[in-house]
Length: 268
Image 1 (cartoon, helix red, strand yellow):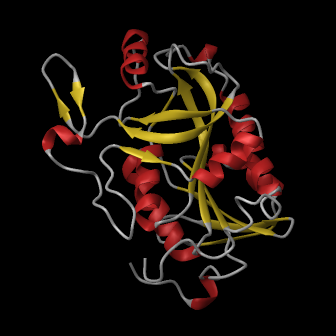
Image 2: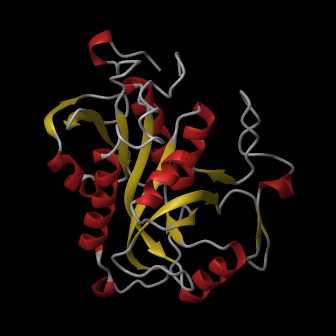
């Protein structure tokens, strides 16, 4: 990837921004409205908008839906903005059996990649360990990851103090469209929230050593396809409100005020 010119690079130091990503523009809209001095520039993947929330620099990027878009979009945005941390925000479905309902918001304690692995004829699934591979090898003191990627402990703590439950998220290429299958996934893998991007973004951030968090508002029950019963607008606003709370206290919370320098290695 060609490095951006100096005037377009994030500052590696105290001014390093927080990168906030979403799959679609509408999932970022309330956050963008809260920023001042927003300037847009072309990024390697899509447009990146940089503004301020008080004294904190915030970069916004839309990746597109799905795991490939999320991985490529995060890597491109992180390479050009050199952020101190990355936060994925958006909406998701709550699995039947989880404590979450429409309009609630939760943060990921970890992300489970529920596609990669071994799928049997009866529909049962085993993770990549069944193939003898890890998703990423050990690197720079970080352990190998099979199909479960944790989020940043400090960001978890800060989000929990804002009242967000910390639960396991799951990512699939195809949305689960059957309530019975959704209930089975919840009981088999202890997952609470489903999306199409989270595990990919978490995997890239983990590989880079970039502090990562994921916040999603619940728009629907997984398996429920009657969109008249969804609460998309409320889920978007609740997720963005939670992230705004985290960002407004960024320089005060002990877990985030230390994340001032770039979390992206030179040359990434």
